[in-house]
Image 1 (cartoon, one colour):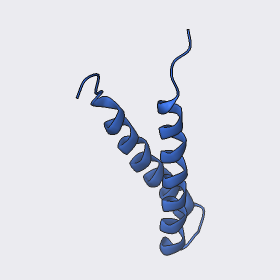
Image 2 (spheres, helix red, strand yellow; image 1 turned 180 degrees about the vertical axis):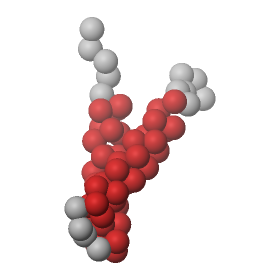
Image 3 (cartoon, one colour; image 1 turned 135 degrees about the vertical axis):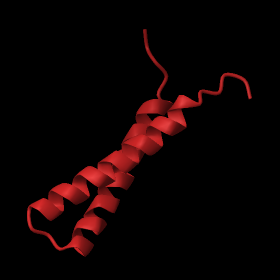
Length: 62
């Protein structure tokens, strides 16, 4: 397990959970039902996790 970075998976999970929490809270604040807000938060969480994962996979160009 050479060159394994422990911070990447932690950052990925943190981005996904924070996105879910933020979108669910905002959707509930704007008047959505809790079930619909939770579904919207889950969709946003998956999208944010995919974007973060793709950005982490790309090599850094100098």
